[in-house]
Amino acid sequence: MPTVEELYRNYGILADATEQVSQHKDAYQVILDGVKGGTKEKRLAAQFIPKFFKHFPELADSAINAQLDLCEDEDVSIRRQAIKELPQFATGENLPRVADILTQLLQTDDSAEFNLVNNALLSIFKMDAKGTLGGLFSQILQGEDIVRERAIKFLSTKLKTLPDEVLTKEVEELILTESKKVLEDVTGEEFVLFMKILSGLKSLQTVSGRQQLVELVAEQADLEQTFNPSDPDCVDRLLQCTRQAVPLFSKNVHSTRFVTYFCEQVLPNLSTLTTPVEGLDIQLEVLKLLAASVVSSSGQILSAFLKNLFDSVVVSCEYMPLPPEEAENGENAGNEEPKLQFSYVECLLYSFHQLGRKLPDFLTAKLNAEKLKDFKIRLQYFARGLQVYIRQLRLALQGKTGEALKTEENKIKVVALKITNNINVLIKDLFHIPPSYKSTVTLSWKPVQKVEMGQKRTTEDTTSGSPPKKSAAGPKRDARQIYNPPSGKYSSNLSNFNYEQRGAFRGSRGGRGWGTRGSRSRGRLY
Image: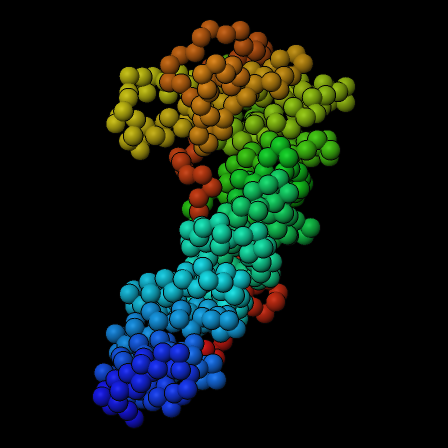
């Protein structure tokens, strides 16, 4: 084993040789042997080996292996120095190997080392993006779980920081191709991260690019399979996939496949859904996702699932009840007033209103005359209770501004007022003869779109806490009188489809599946 003096002497030989450095193979071999020495010798070797690496291609494997020995050293300062110098080995055909090694080194628990590895990966990414991606995806597909996890997170956080000259169209195509391979067997959290990666690629910002992403999500959601409401993993997969698809939908990228699946398979099983996350209002979550999707559905196959939406949910006693029958003394015959679930009804009426806009003859058809009559009775009853709540909420929020509106209680009341005002606007539309679908509302959990100066406002104000201007008279009162307004319910959950990512996708492969991914022990790294 060479001493510190011998290492310096051989370093001098190589440094002084200038253009003839490749003739001093023996001197470089002495430096390589420095990795077998003590702490001082190893530190020098970590610096000297990469400095002359490019001059000795015949010793490339020995040099890389020597540097890797130092990357695994017990002394943290030696490891850090060795990692810092690794990009110097990333030349030609060695680059994918170095990328693979650096990806494995992401598993370190030392924060300083972890940052060095990240910086080294970014450095070689700028040298050869395709080669670096080869090393990263190799470990994502075949590496240990911790390496896979951190490699995916590296891509999800660092790709967006790279300049356009690095992330060329060809590089983005490679990312998409490799990502599709990974998506064949991913956990729920991994799927979300890959959608973040792919949706950030410039080449996928076009209509055709967005359509590709929606197709990827639809494949993950298994929309061709029969929905199993009692399987929490099946429910979780559908919800997570739909949440990823919603931001991609537009007038040119349709949501019809998802809306059809929800209306045909999910809504009829709404009351029997098994929640994948404790404390999650699974029924409301489903209805929110449906409401967020319907606006982008096409009009080609609407009649069948509009009927299903209407028959299965909109006129169900649970959400849109009939007025309770009265006893001879004028009091309700039943023991309790029905509960008016405003959050649910907002989603349901909005969904029906959006789909009805695409098929306006649905309620006016002679075949549905009785349905329309029954529907209006339910709407009328609901509207009366709704007006009571709107008055109560406006009174509670009257005069409150700034910090007063930021308390948790008042935040809930503000959202509740948005919900009830939205429902009020939709009911007014549906009470027109024939039913109208012209009004536009912003769902209570979405930000209100600002109207530019000079732009005509087409959206009714459904969020104001002040009384609205006097409008046309509402629906005429039904013969059945209501003496006490029914109680109401709205969700206090202010989040936008926010719940814990769990489960796994694309199972039955012996890998991740809908369970745990098998751990593979491969001995020494690299």
